[in-house]
Length: 110
Image (cartoon, rainbow, N blue to C red; front, side, top):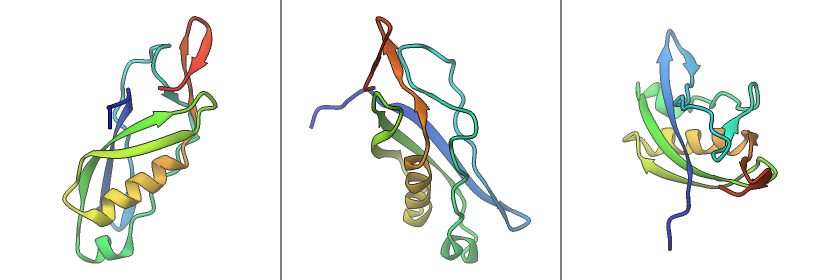
């Protein structure tokens, strides 16, 4: 399958004093790339299974964002080493809303 241009995000999952947290990789805002709208990306649920095993890691995801800002497709580009954490990162990012990329003044899938 041909690779499509993806928005890349790294999601960091860790337990600090038992509290889950997430961070997305910051990238310069460019009109030809989608950008996250503040407050529109929920924190990933820290899986109880991963927490009980003390798992933590960084999952790098590639996402295709539609013209409406919804995530159309997500691919794990860099796994964390824990399938449970990778799934939690994917599920969280699937709920995000983005400003779509713009080309010649029109939103485009990217």
